[in-house]
Image (cartoon, rainbow over all chains, first blue to last red; front, side, top):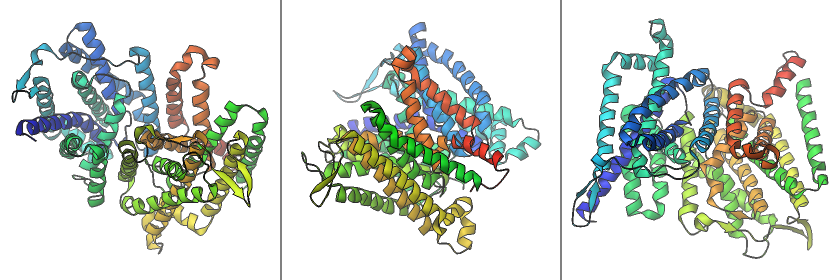
Length: 288
Length: 329
């Protein structure tokens, strides 16, 4: 393995991991703070990708599509929280699993009705449509570097939001003791709505920026969902820091697994999870 | 107690109706109901874990698929294999797999348990999907269905739809009665105790780990039984039967039907498969049927919101009114 080749794989693993972080961070927040197991989280990733495709088709620019799409997904998140999730707080996890499973079916079928069942490609924005030459015949696309950079920025923003803002304080208060936070005058219902909408928007945004790389296809949410659950569990439920560590781990393990041991690449991720959980049953950064 | 008898009466009625079902003499419907009953067996085996032991497994497809693959691998290519030893062999492999993985997964709890069971099932999936030994992603055909020969006389010919139908029906009833029996015993009571409060059970001197492991192994073996029958019915196995979609679907049948009731998962299996069949029937619903998942999804959401005890809860609620607050355990 030449150094340039190794570097490319390293960057790929990093980019894949960071992208997964966007989806997994929302999942772990919704899980840790609201106590909701959200199987439909992968569907939001898919909705984002399809929105990017159709809005980019209308406006001619992916950037414009993202700028219009994000508010739409925030509204979608708030609406779903208001209509459905609100009724699930404090109920047995299994009913959350059942309801969000139903949501997956609804989203898949809405996608089929609105956008059809074909595979679509999305154009990389012109500004980022270059590659950096590493050797004579190996190069790395700038767009992927751009994805990594944006994901890192968002991760930093998320960290700042949770640790250093008033809203973040409310979120943490709500996570540690819902009743106490409420009796201290925090509008916990609103906090939950915002957290859910934030999670939806993050997942959808991941789908949007990855659309030019992965293309847009039916069922794209399912695979991301399962991998992100693996990340949430490895990292420890509710821990954004854990989600970050686990995302990078999974991104690297998957990328290098496919090169070094292609025969068992599919199971590496799950093997990793099993090892981590048998060693630390509460995940790497779990609090329980 | 009167309430329990009502449920039993309904079950007997269902059994009688099913026993008469092949009289309608339709290949399509006989196959469909056979498939539903196999899923009912599968769902009951999962209910032992989810509803009675408090262990939510998201990897039950591992047993379903594993046992199908055992049948496909031990069967000679163009000859029928004997049911006598291939069925116990398949179930034994499942039980062993459950025993080994159970020792590991039972160290975890709650959502972590859900995920580790998923992890092991996914590993099995990728073993068969990515290696050539089980036919890779194409799977293996089982050209001849297993036979049951006693003293040179062929007792069962599973190539005949009706005979397979009755075999599955009898096994379904047997599994129900077996589980009822087990759950009514001290062992079953202990499992329920563990589900409610494991610490207290341990304080009472029950070796809870052993109880949970036994339940896990039994559930795996019975899941294998369902998988074996499914492989016999379809005549082929491929990695799809091991996928997490399969684990998800059976879990939905259990929750939707009403966990911890044993008959609930049977109702769930019937509702799940039949609803899917009706909603996607183009002859019945026309072009709308193409988008059957939308109606199915809305139905699942409504059950989650308004039927806290699943479909079986409908029966139970009316029972509770009729028997005026008597316990329904």
